[in-house]
Amino acid sequence: MVMPVLLCAAAVVVIAWAHKGADASEIGVLATGKLALRVREHVALCAVSTALAVAVAVPAGVVTTRPRLRRLAPPLLFVANVGQSVPTIAVLALAFSVTGIGFRTAVIGLWAYSLLPVLRNTVAGLAGVDPAVVEAARGMGMSPAQVLRRVEFPLAWPVVVAGIRTAAVVNVGTAALATFVGAGGLGALITVGLDNQRDRILYTGAALTALLALAVDWAIVALAELGRSRR
Image (cartoon, rainbow, N blue to C red; front, side, top):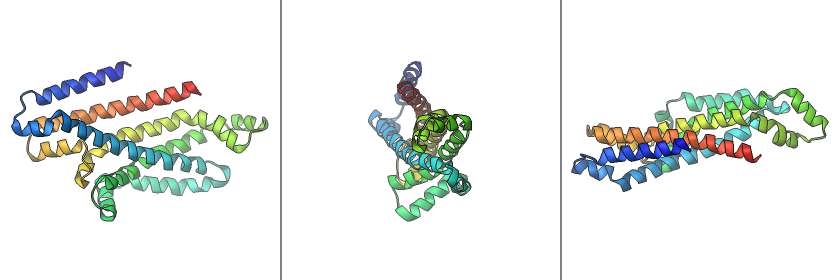
């Protein structure tokens, strides 16, 4: 529990520094209520887009590691690679042309950008399971679904979590661009600071984004450890 305490303390220091010495125009942007709103917007963007990526990429990774469907792995990985190789701002622009401005557009762009780490790690984790262990499970009379649920996926779980962790942390930084499609988030502080040459606002937005990335990283590791201990 040391990490969350340190992160909370760092956030308090950042907010106190932001308020100390701020002029009237900066206070309007750096008010505690508005900072909390920006953090909630940022968390919502990252949580929804990462959850959608997991919901799509993990089943896709499982399907492509089944013996009869392994030929699907290269095209699926190629599609996921395209989503991440295209610059994020371009993905947001393409989504904007279809869905317009707002939260949904940003989620689509972030979702496309976070598919690859989850899909690649799911495939790698399941492919790395020792075939002898799988054969032993089958020899015990387990069905393919039981082998996947009770043997393959638990063994692949650390690798899968690493992919989810990577996608979520990258999403926190990438979500700063969501402000360009009217989705808010901490990127709005960074943009206001740059546009108006207000270093205090710029540094506050950047610092809170970094702290949020560290918090997300810690939370995913903690949840993964909790889930493993319960199993």
